Image 1: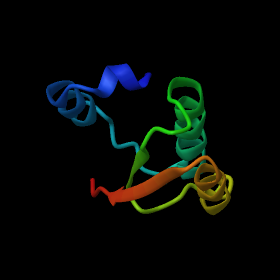
Image 2 (image 1 turned 135 degrees about the horizontal axis):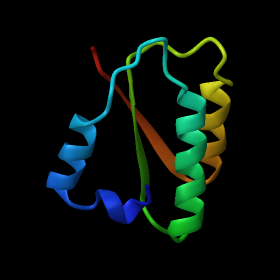
Image 3 (image 1 turned 135 degrees about the vertical axis):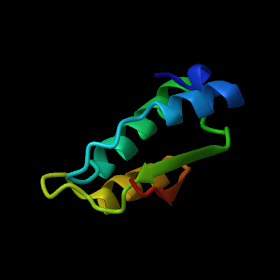
Image 4 (image 1 turned 180 degrees about the vertical axis):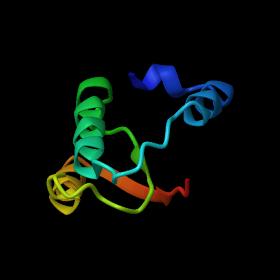
Length: 87
C-alpha cells in the first residue's frame, strides 16, 4: 500500500480490522524498512514523518534487527511509535 491508501479514517480502520493474526512473531525490521522506503519515495524530506508499528510484541526469531532498522529510519527523520496488539 502507499500512503494515499491510508488517509481516510474509515479506510484505515477497515484495513487494520482485516489484518490476520498469524502468530509466530512480527517481522518488525521489515515493516520499519518498508515504511522508511515509502517515506523516502512519497514524501519530501521536510514532511513530518511518523510510522506506527503494530506488533504482537514478539519479534520473529529470523527477523533482522528492528533496532538497526529504527536507527536507519531516524536518520531520515522518521519517528517510529510501537503499538502492541494482543490476539
